[in-house]
Structure formats: structure tokens, C-alpha cells
Length: 500
Image 1 (cartoon, one colour):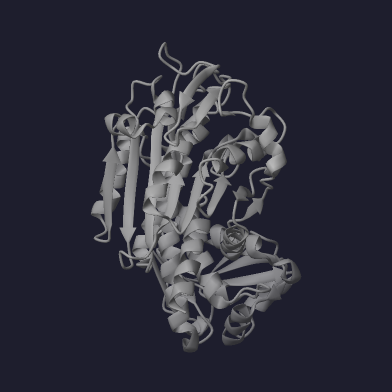
Image 2: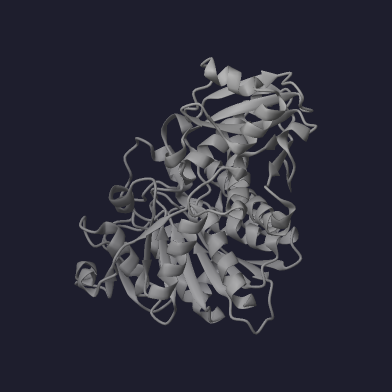
């Protein structure tokens, strides 16, 4: 898909389709009014007749609009103007893009970024338009024998801006949107692959391929023998039950001087989680292929970072394994020794994500990160607490937590902070080891975060629990590509602050 920005009157656009908004009840946007004036009231006459009310998602395709140079005009309903929010804007862009892709318009000029959203400037709307349009066109068909392609797919979207004065900022916003959209698609592709194809070795190959596409990147993969030498007993205890060898993937992006301390992103890469000996219920177990969406998010964020050429050093670490039932698998009651030297009593083998993450977090300390963020589909408890809309956020450093929360609000990929109070540590006590790997049903997301905090005390660290946000179920089942947008916005903000 090609995306462009430019300014110009709607009636003067030589294109397959011009897209303008109509608010409820029958209120024309500024661009629609311009078209109406040029066409001697053609659009207002249709609206008065009741052909378009302006309800969200409603569309009306017009041909041969007088005194215009375009082949078609698409009117799209935007709902009530006072209720036109971020989510409504995204829905409208997605509706238009799907409609045009299925209707044979191979290019279009969108006048949607000119619609007013309280507190959002034109550059923000350009970025969001790209992300929303790309998401609307996303399809995963890699594993189908026959792929369904549109007969005349939409290939070019031009986003209109009010004047040329905003061109420079909007072109930067366009590049940000394209980088995020590409990173999100990469994360979705990896997440949607089945566990028999997307193995730890496959993830390592994809990391290598990503590094080969960017000169500022390089990749290193640690094998089980390397991890054994480093004393990663927690991570290796999980992989013991699988025939697939574990991998620890390092993906380095160097956009700044070597002296600049890196930001380290750690993504949980469980390519399939059966629960181990503490076997999961059969219902919906197929969705446990999504247990590597933390890893996918790291890859997506690093891809966006490299595409934007951000002046930062960023390291992605992905501990990757399967969690399967086997004669050599972890058993409830086993005690393992982590790379940090802390011993862990495995009370539930289905709480394996924290076991592979804790060793990766300890390993990250050698890079002396200025910031350490892990992202993981870690707990069903987080899904119960926050549902499918917000990531769970925990941090040992308030300024970092606020940075991530603000980045999420800015880009529309929100998180919600949960407490990391010491009182909850009581639930992780073990009679036989330094710490238990679960803390009971109460506050399950928080005790999981607190478990990880024991391995990050020397660093500014944050934990994103994406168990509720990384994929959707039901008829629209599929990976969401979250939190690539949040992490990319966080990195963009960090780069901007460094420049000033």
C-alpha cells in the first residue's frame, strides 16, 4: 500500500475516489461542503432526500458528481460531531478502506484527517489513518492453500491536509504510521502462525532475517548449551519437556553512539503453551500459539525503530521455548535454580512464562540498560482484571510507568498501572525455595509482576502483561499486533527528548 499526504480542494482531485465525512444528523464536513458548493448543491440535495443520515459506518458511493474531476465520491457517516472520538475516527477510516478495497477503487483521496477530534492535531490523525487503513486491509492467509485477493485492490491512499504549512510535520507523521503499521503486521504474522511452524528455531530465523534487512541491526542466538553454561536453570527447566530446543534471541539495533546505554525490550516467546504437567483445559488451547506475542511485539517494535532510524540503542531479548507435558518436564514441587542464583519452587508448571523471563531479565543486566521493559502474555488474571482493552502495567520506577502510560494514550494503545506493593510478596513465600512461582488466585497478575521484580531490582524496569490484548477470539480470532504501537511511540518520545 502506498500512502501520501498533500493539500488541495476536493473537487480538483483527479482520482478514482474522494472520501468525505457526513455527521449525524445530515451535517456535512468542510470537505463535503466544498464538494457541494462546486456541484451546485448535488450532495446536499441527496442528504435532504434522506439517502445519507450520517450514522457511524454508513456509506454512500456517488458517481458523476457535477463539476468534479474524480470518478467517484464516497460519503461516510461519522456519527454525531460532539461524539467523534479517537475510536470513531479509526472505525471510519477502517470502514472506508474496506469498502474501497472491495469496490474496485484502486486509489483514493481521504479528507478524513481534516475532521476535528478534541485534543488531536492533524499529524496525529495522519499517523492514525495509516495504522487504521493498514489494519483494515490485513489478512493472514499464509497457511491456506488458496488465497483470496481483491479483484482490483486499493493500492494508493492520499491523505489530505488543510494547507502546505503542515506538510513537513505530516510527512513525518506518515512515516511513523507506516513504520508502526509494518511492525504491527509483522507481529500479527508471527502470532497467527501455528505452533508446528512457528517454533523457537523459526523465531530465531525470523530475527536473523529482520537483522539482515537493516544495516543498523545484528542478531545473536544462544543455544541450550550456552544457556546451561550461563546457569539459566529456570528457562531450561521449561524447555526440558519439549522436543524443540530453546533459543535465547538477541536482536541489537544501534542508532546512536556505542557509549549510549541501551533500552532493552524482553519478549516472552512461548511458541506453544500446553501448560506442561499442569495441563491446560482442551477448550481454546489452540490459542496458546499466541503465547509468543511478547516476542512478536519486540520484533515489531524493533522493526519500526529501525525503519524510523531512531537515534537510540535498543536491544530485543526473546527467551523462546515450548511448554509441553513429557517424562522430563517440570513437575509441581520441583525446585530450579535461576541464573541469578535464586531458587524457585515450581508449584504450577503452567506459570512457566515467568521462569523463562526471569533468566532473560538477569541476562539483560550485562548490557547496563537505561530502561528495561518486558512484555508477556503472562496471566489470565490480568485479562479478568482489565479485559481486552488495556495492557496491565507494573513498574519499579514511577517516571518510566508514566512515560509508558502517556505513550499509550498518545498513540491509542493504552495501558493501566497495577500496584507492586511489597505486601503482595507474602503470597510468593515458599517453605523450600527462595520464592514460589505462583502466589495463589488473589491478585494473580500482580504477584506475577512481583515475581519478575525480584530479578530487576538494580534497573528501571516495567512489565507489560498483554494476556488480554495480544489476540482476539471468536469469529475475528487473530493476533492484534499490540503493544507494538505503544512501544514505538515510547521509543519515538525517548528519541525526541534526546534531541532537545
